[in-house]
Length: 275
Image (cartoon, rainbow, N blue to C red):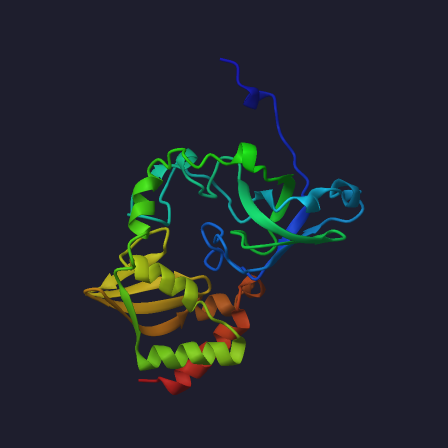
């Protein structure tokens, strides 16, 4: 049986890169927030006549960004989407980044163009994501509001219901979160609390782990948040670093996000919460 894969290889060169405050997958939303006020940037590579390629693009309100999920190293035929119950779906029925070819497609508001810098609205990509192409969004051909949402229809209806769970922060966790904000400008609570209000039960993709009894942990990028589930109350008990002392001092430590903050946090916590 003939297969084009036997004879064809494809090479892409990035035309630019994403510049955003989303430093890791946790801080980036699974889908851009409609109507959000967030501002991000796409910086195109110089020396390729992209200034000419951008001509007339500023007449459009929205654009499609074709990207490369550069942090993925393998694909999965079935994945567990972050939204909804812990159920695996065929990857082609999802927007998961774990694809045979790690290509992403995102529609974003185009706010302005200044030279080789595109200012855009909310997007679901991390800082440094390579951009492969840019296309205008055309409402006459890109929008089909009456089309089926498939398995996501049930999820959409569930999300229209007010969140079932409430958040409570224990004094120790409050002190730890304040310390991170004041000393390092680190605050992952908005994203974490949004997930926990919807469904704090164990879930692989949401990175929520059952630790025993009613104790749980959610991974928040380079950080960990420990909580107890008491009926519909999620009580945040404490915060922890996401990497071991050995990893933070190891040969690849420079690659770890918030490394210095984690080292400092461990020392501060050890002297303030010992015993």
